[in-house]
Every structure is written in structure tokens, then in C-alpha cells.
Image (cartoon, rainbow, N blue to C red; front, side, top):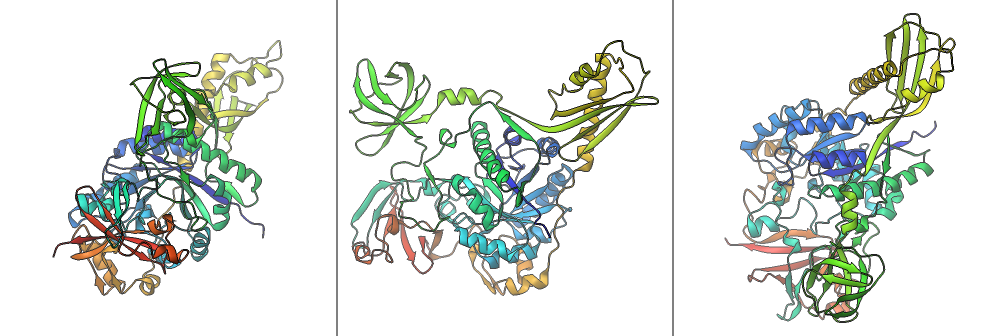
Length: 617
């Protein structure tokens, strides 16, 4: 049997409907967007009516819309969550990205459920549990290697989703409680206060200061452009871009970048893989992810642990690429040696002598002299990074992409007049009959008829082929052809809506779930309501601790579990450099300026670091 090409999905974020439409125009096969409530980005909510409009737009291209409902839920919230899910189903949403297992026991419409990154899928056993529970797509933890991903993909039959770009949480998703502990803002409830972006002091077991005011938990951004094909071959079928709080410029640029790179692979590997939606995006710019917000890039642990330190010591903010160095700074301005043209409105930044991030706006550029908006005193050789690219932002503020479906139109002569058949690359087709007399033409008309039918601007279609099948030359007024063309385009759009079939939910198999359900679940199971507790108990969990947000553990406990290891990045790994490791006696402790301390514990068997905190008894 010949291999059936596997669909490959590019999944883009949408802060709002504008971002969602632009993501689709720039090549996304699917978008994920927050609904009015219960999404893991509390600041990114959208109305059901707006989402319905996005669904209608996306489905023209066979693209899908997933709504995030991926917070843990309290008992009093379950009825409203159920009502919201029914409204989203009626709006045409293709799937929900969820975290709370209580949803498995609610009265839901036939809508597909996808397992959120908050569900902490790190092992084949966890993926098998989710598949048996009825989840139709599973996102794996960002920390996994290609080997880990392959093992999970081979253990289940549902599509595997993995992140390829964007901001990184230092803790395994779903297992971060630092924001809740410190600020009463739960990451599992969509209100993360970004504890990991703060500056810390680091001391060793003797109280010696090792690092001062450094962002020891702040990671660079993920960029797996060079690993897309390897991820496909490991079993990834959905490539997810992080960024549901990002602006439309970011969404346009990053989506278009990955669309181009994925398309190059799909063209070479057409025997094995195919695109998950239809249409071709035409761009007015050259995508470049280095020109959008980023903290520097890493492939993270996709290839295991590497010697490159992960944390960004100096700042959790985006510095942008280094594009110039200071030659001289005087009353005329800042004379620079630049590797790329600078422009008025650019934001430039640098690290001062104390390693602190400083920045300024460019007022004017004359040759190689930059005039800053605020006075600067910069020594020769200072490296300047462009954190805001004014020319790129101006370009991206304009319409930057169209997306069209290749279509064929055939005008046929029939006894009562004419028929126009229209079909596009998705397989949808429509036929419209028009009553008319057959008026003979004195001169050739087929070329003029073809030109009029091909004018599909302002529609989702572009004419790939036009056929005119008449018995001799016929005269049809251009105004009449234009009206007929509009009718057949509308008919084809109706055919798209009628033909669109969303994923259906998968059944739950309790007999498969029971042997996979742990007998004891601690607070990291995130059980925040009685419905989830009852379901897990029925599946064999004899001991179920309440979620951290319901009842925080007393005494010292883990608030973050990280693959990132400060010891390793300082060159003091117990495994790799045991002699140097002894120079940093335990316990290493992170300190905030307000005096709060967070001891670190290193689980070398798992190659993980834990951040600890204490709740008074």
C-alpha cells in the first residue's frame, strides 16, 4: 500500500480576531484564540460572536479555529464553562484546548478536545492516558527531546502538537506555582505574574553571593526553524507558535516565516507529508523572525542539554539583533559603524558598565551619525542592539498578505442560456445556470469573456484556468458576465460552508484509563473541583490532593520544576564537573530584593532543578 501523506498543521496564536485573520492570510492552517473566559491568558479574551466570524473566514481555506479553555476550574464555574462550550460549538469552533479533566464529565456538544500544554505531557504513559480519555490532539512539553517526542508519537494514534517558536516558561507548564505562591496570581488560572522574569541574587550554602541582580530564571525564546523536518520525522503533526499576547505585527511575521520554511519541506517530501489547509499566501515583505520581539533564540532541549547557558543574565526584555557599534559620541550625536541602515524612530539599546539595559529612541539619522531623543554618553565600542525596527513596523502596518485558492471557471452554453462551473483546489465546486439568449458575435469573444471571468480580486479565489465552451462566438455583455461571476463565487463560498466537516470528539475508554491512572495524585494534578475528583477516583486514584490554588501545601514544597539548571549553566554540574560542583555547596538559594528566599534542589537522576518555597503552618 502506498503511504498516505500526513497532514502538517501550522498553528498560530491570535490575541484577537484581527490577529486571527492575519495569521490565516499569512499561511496558518489553524489558529488558537481565547474565548470570553477560562483561557490561560486572562488578558486575551474575545466574544463568541467575534469568534464565529473568524470561524467563517478560516473555514473558506480549510483552516481551523481552536479556542483555549485551558484553566483549572472551580465548582461554581463548571455550569458557565458548559454553557460557553455550547455557544462556541454553535459558533463553528473546531476544537477546545483544555486542561481541567472535569470537562470530560460535563454534558458537552460533539466538539473535539485538545490537551493543553498545561496538562504536562512528558511521557508515553501520559499521552496514552489522554488518548484513552478522548483527547483528539496532544501538545507535548516544550522540554522534550526529539527522542522523547518520537517515543510519545509512536505510543498513540492521535496527532502530536509541539511548540516551535516563542517565549519559554522556565517551569514545566502546569507545574508552576511560583506566581500563585508569591502574588496570589495562578498560572493555571491564566494570571501568571512572570516570576521567572524577575532579577535574583544567588547564594551558596555558606551564604556567599554568587550572582547579584541577575535574571537567572529568564530564558531566551524558542526558535526551531532548523529542526522542522526532524520534528516531522519524529511524529509532530502540528507546529505551534507561542504568542497569544503578541501584536499583529509579530503574528504576521512569524507565521509567514514558518509557512515558508514548512512549504519548502512539504515540496520536497510530498510523498510523506501534505499541508493541512488550502490556499497560497502572497506576501509584500520578506519574513524575518529576528526583526520581531525576541530575547535571543534557542532550540531548547530538542537535542538534549547543550553547553550553551540558557538564562539571559542581563534582562528579560527583547534587545534585538546587534546592528552597530559606537565610534564616537559627542555634541553632534553618536557616530556608529552599522551593519544595516538605521532610521528615525528606531529603538536602540545597550548594556551599561554595570550590565544594566539602557535604551533610547532615534530622532534623526544623517549618514553614520545618529541623533538620540535623549542625551547619551556612550564609550567607543559600545554594541548597539535594535529593539524597535521602525522601517519594518511601518511596512507591517500596511496590508502585507493575501491568500487565495486556485480556481477553474468554465462557461458552458446550455439550451436555456449559459452555465458557469467553478471549482477550487480544496475540491469544492458550484454550478450556476443563467437564462439568456445565444447572441452571435461578429468578432472573437472568448478572450474577452475569459478576462472578465478571471477578475476575482476581492474574493478568496484566483483564476488558474478559464474555459469558454460555446457553439461559435457569442456576445455576452461584460456587465452581465460580471454579475454571473459574482453569483458563482457566492455559490462556491456557500459550498465551502456546506462541505466543511469539523473533527468529532473521541470516545472515552475507562477500561484503558484505569490501569494508567496513578493511585496517588499530589497537588500537581491540579484538581480544583469535585467533578474532576470524582472522575479520577472512579478511575482508581485513591488519594487526590487538592490543587495548589485550593489549598497550598504547608511547609517547604516545590513551586517550580525546571529542565533548566542553574548549576549546569554556571559550569558546576554534579555529573559533568563534580570538582567544580563542590565549590558551590548546597543549598543554592535565589533571593528577591524584598528578602524572600527560594532554595534550589537538584534532581540529577532526572536532570531537573526544583525551586522551593515555604508556606507557614
